[in-house]
Image (cartoon, rainbow, N blue to C red; front, top):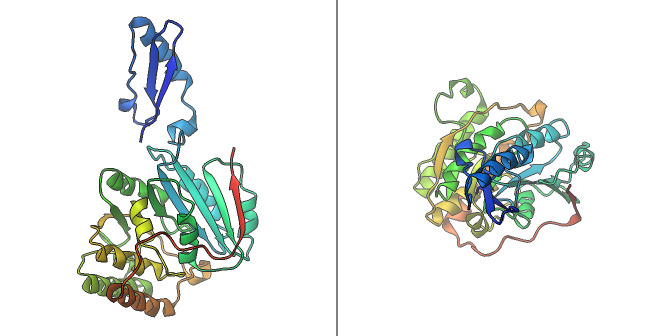
Length: 307
């Protein structure tokens, strides 16, 4: 949400302005006359640092979780791309190093002291779902989304998803398969995704085009109610199935997608197809807790990057 800044003036009036990035939203609320209006113009020109323009002033409204496992080539670039997204509200980035062994940990420890980035470390690799569980215990925002530490997705595509949930939708998915996706038809992962998505829709009585997307933007209170238990990639069907069980409506918007190959670091494997199916059955037809988020896996502690 836009943050209002108030400054008492020497003449006894109070000057206020907002940190909203939309120029139309920057309207002074001046208690006084022409002199206050003049001082407002001078002050507004002085208070335009990039961090304010990018929505970093005040407590975070949006929390962005980045699980990392052996992504030494891309993790810093992804963090920088996410930081460059002009979200209208303050945001935080929680990076969870899930026991990386390729140098990713060193890259994360050498990050600049960015006040909007916090880094947590798992002693051993526990899985993407486990990394997300760890981060959910630490988030401070009202909304939450996951960003993979590779370059398959464009972080700027999170903006319309955020506007959806900020406007009242409890959940909004970014779909890789809305619109023309013929260029993906030659990939086995595309057809596996389509089969899993069709099964998920049938099992849960919903209509989605991409239940396996990384970009699942939602309210933080909704995310906590799901009590994610899967420690690997099966967290994706678990989340969607539990949302369906709770009758939470899911909206979708298209996003861009540049898939990578196994040789480039893609980690999902054929066995995950069957783990996904098992997760759908398990969380559709068995009871599940909607209490607090599960305890994190063993950790060596955490490090925070603060200015």
